[in-house]
Structures are given as structure tokens and as C-alpha cells.
Length: 103
Image 1: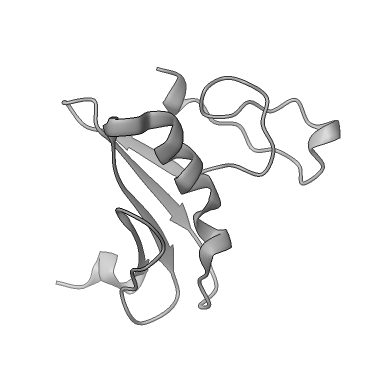
Image 2 (image 1 turned 60 degrees about the horizontal axis):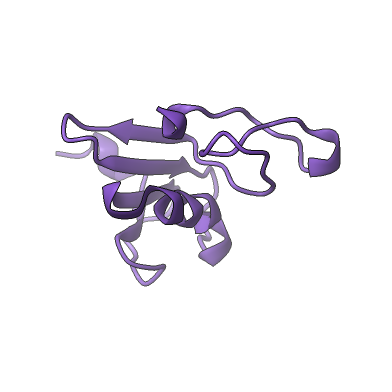
């Protein structure tokens, strides 16, 4: 499936031959992890090591949502902050890394 294909790209797209989620060349859109469930629904996860989170951190997830259409279920940016934050778009959340390890 083309959505699960991902290569890292350099910040200069002119010198990169990376491919986007759809298999086409792209710039400035990547997602660290894309999960697909048995129903072929997609979940994107971006992992960020710093605390401030903003719209720019959701760029790759928004592109994935655009390409996947109804298959896209949720996009999460995991970050080093303390609170779950919404308001970045439909089905997009920023979730603290600590939430993965808490009960």
C-alpha cells in the first residue's frame, strides 16, 4: 500500500529523490509512523522531542489525511509537554510522550 511507504528526505527537495505517501515526489511532508488497522483505516504519529507544539508540526499528518481521505482516522503529534492539546484540525491532537507510559 503506498501510504506505508516512507523515506526520509533532506530539507532541500531539489536534491532529494524521496517519495511522498502516494509514491510521488514531494517536499516538506513526512510522518514518523503510519499504522493501518484490519479495516484499512490509517493513524499517523509524529514524534517530537521538544515541548512547544504548533500547526507546523502537523504538516505531514494533514497531508496524510488529505491523501487518505475517509481512511484517515487520527493524527497524533507526541511531544515532551504535559497536556493533551487539540485545535490543530479534525482528528488531530498533540499528546504528551509521558501518556504512553502512564496507566
